Amino acid sequence: MITTMWRQTATGLRMIVAFTILLGVLYPLATFAVAHIPGLAASAEGSVITDASGTAVGSSLIGIDPVPADPAKDPYFHTRPSASAKDVLGPTDTTTSGGSNKSGFNTDLLDATNQRRDLIAAREGVAPAAVPPDAVTASASGLDPDISPAYAALQVARVARVTGLPVATVEKLVADASSGRMLGFLGEPTVNVTELNLAVAAAA
Image (tube, rainbow, N blue to C red; front, top):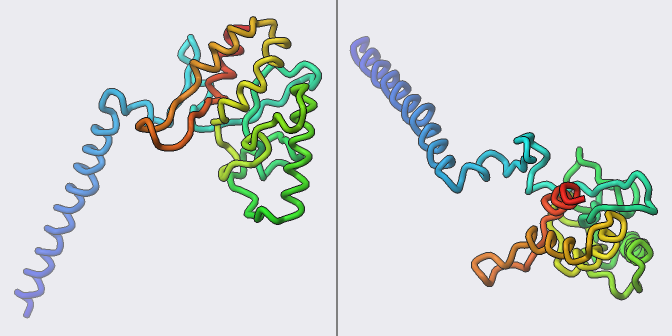
């Protein structure tokens, strides 16, 4: 009986050592190596954006709506609204990520959407009907960095006017921060606001 117990214990210990080496050492090293193949390393490390000096200034996966020092002179592009914000247009509460979980028939949601449309129309100097849907609807995470090309185009004139950049220059920055459909047919074209605002700040 003692011999059998010792044999089973020894077998168990060998299995622990083998699987510790395999799953605790070799597998993590293999995963790390694959994740850092050229072309994948940036995504594996959080898609961090750096400035000209190499300093990390943000992540292309996280969008934070900029709060202008002077609302009358707002120099940056805005993200989609966040359901976690205290006010209908922000600022975003970056400590919380999530949607409102309110249905399309919820009166509070409809009121907030209408308020956002009126505020954005006034900010951009256009009719409320010109404000695109993604400008007034909160993203699921509340930290979505992407907006539609239509919402970016709506903000070009204001950004150009406040920063003093030519409209053509701002439009070029928007184009540079734009992405098409995945594989050519999945999803919709988007504009990354985080990358775009960093480019605007550098150009201005």
